[in-house]
Length: 119
Image (cartoon, rainbow, N blue to C red; front, side, top):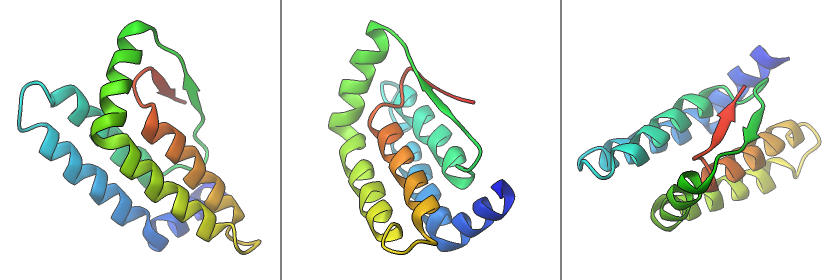
């Protein structure tokens, strides 16, 4: 189911979301200060291409908290809103519920990417 789910995910919009993360990551990497944020965006782009079968474990300490606050202010809110809208639209049908759940998982991760580990 993971492979099929990931293929359908990519075809139904995952590629566009991953390109959005990639573009945002490249914009952040223009400055030296933005490189850590850009690296998170690039990691999110890779995760967005194949979210099925991956688990996210949250942790981290004070540095992660500070980085997440900066992240939320600069990039997290618009991406989380986009993922939530996609999740609600996917959950309208029974067939779309697994895709909606993946969108909600990505919405949470797009708000708090620092200190999160993808397994």
